[in-house]
Length: 114
Length: 108
Image 1 (tube, rainbow over the protein chains, first blue to last red):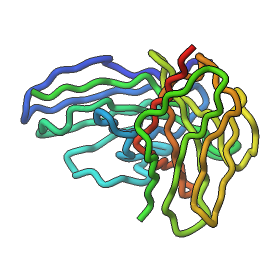
Image 2: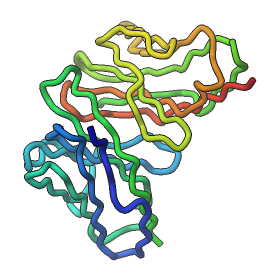
Image 3: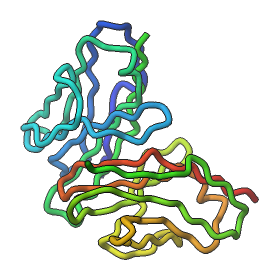
């Protein structure tokens, strides 16, 4: 069974640029959630995708958008980057209907905005 | 508003000492509560959840609805317990609301 993978590992961008982060869900999982973890904070829910549709969104502006593909992998896109977007971005996959819907996290992508 | 509070950023104990990591929550309903752990250079992973009432690696956590708490306890800490611990709440969807985390340091 393959775990959740994310790419790239690290990324440096400048203010105003756009970025795309990628996530491959664990085998058999059809739900992907994205979290932002700023330094010294816990992960904050951005949004979730279930069967290619957005299925819940946290308190993030529309410049944070996402996609899920038929193979359940997912992308997080952030437009017009701001300095405060610097954070670790975590992807987690799960399979609704299983006990407690346990989420399995990837290693994260560290984004630095200069 | 839904919120999870972990009042301690750092908890330091000696090996063999009891450990209690505090977690309080705010939620109008019946939440599911979890503890996630992140060991050094590893990814965030589930430690335990209140529904299963299980003990994992010697850790237990009891949901106290009256005090809206879900403290994590272990009677005898081990050096390998050193890690970052996050308490999290789910509103019965897959969305998790995390606390700010507590770093547990266990000294030999």
